[in-house]
Image (cartoon, rainbow, N blue to C red; front, side, top):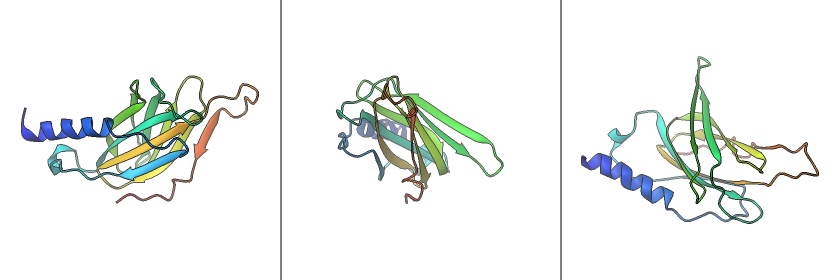
Length: 153
């Protein structure tokens, strides 16, 4: 393997092994700096990494579906998805820059969608999911628009 491939693999490993975020936070969006060669990632694409945790216990949520969706100017939709590890971590490669909705679904939890504006090549997006409330079935999803104005450079 060449050096740039090893650099990309090292970055991915470091990002996946990054420490957890405080479970009191519902969503954390952090631009990341990398020494990976510019040619390692297609122009106009972002690598999004993060962790999904239980909002009440702070424990990682494994096997959660994480999906990033982007609509271009012509209305064409690009979707990139993955499943979280046992530690609740995920990596989405090739997410288009611009306005993106990131949705997380996990059995036993409310679905969560956040809107972010991606303008950097490497971003961490950590999310806390709230457990389903069987006494209040009307709260089946959480949409967090608090990140809609976030521009990452």
